[in-house]
Picture 1: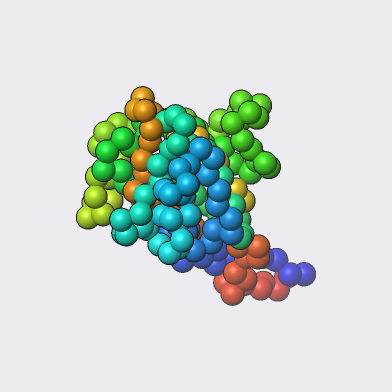
Picture 2 (picture 1 turned 135 degrees about the vertical axis):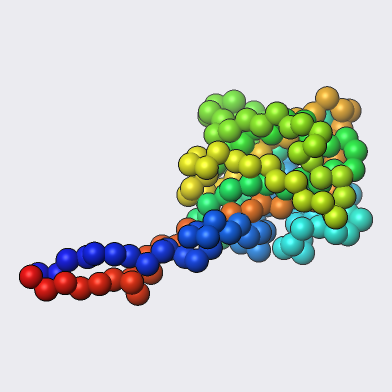
Length: 181
């Protein structure tokens, strides 16, 4: 009879609680209410945290709705938002919704709501301030939806990073031990 006595950790990153940028794992990103010349794509196109002069800016009002699909399931642990001015003040996050927009956003429940303090938004690329997410609510994310709200006439985001780890489809079985009865 074969009995399983131990498993190796699923990944070294998970076991050490290391968070890496998940930007390279974005399959599709779309933003509603963005200005034509200041888009979400302009700050995500390099698949790394934006350091160029490009930025995302809202158009008709201060709300932005970011819809981000990943090319595989991920665990999202924290966000980094950089905004020199007119930054976001509230984030309403949802996961794994299909075709979400401003008209149907209220049809589902928020996964997490974050009221941002001024010290949670990085002002420049030299500082990284983590916006920590609920540790158990973002364990199997295929798509992340962020409704950005602020009291400004419009909202500006200079850089966005999503930190976490990959969810692997199979376990690492290298630590499997066999016992004979």
